[in-house]
Image 1: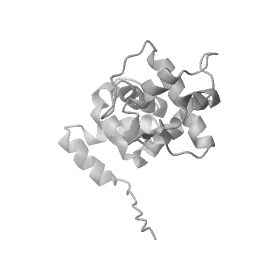
Image 2: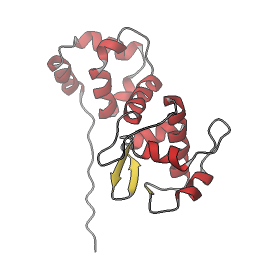
Image 3: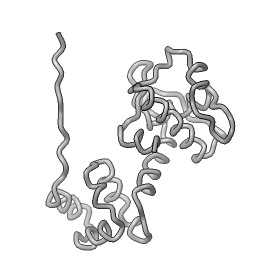
Length: 172
């Protein structure tokens, strides 16, 4: 019999976010005004996004930002960084193409209720099942490029999106 531990990540309270803002020397009222005027309140349930906004606040505050901008920034960053214990990322693909490939994989995984992809499986069968990108099939090399990025966690030969919200965003 297995013992299953369930953890609940609690939302940060406004006071806790205010402490982080103070630590980062960000004006609290200016920050909350920015959040409100850009309709980003609902994103404050996701700690990953909270820290992305805070860490990039000086850039974000100079323009109109929506939630897609923030998620795309996170995804772009992770697609350009090699994951731990992985091959180097060498590709001729643009970031837009890599996002499209990731989106196809995210859609496949969610629709097929797969939380992980294993490189032990025949990747050519998987690539045949993925949606085409720019009217072209996704190659095994393209798939390996995104799996080698930090967009995916790796355990042995199994890969999963590093954060469920990124997978869900890519599917949408």
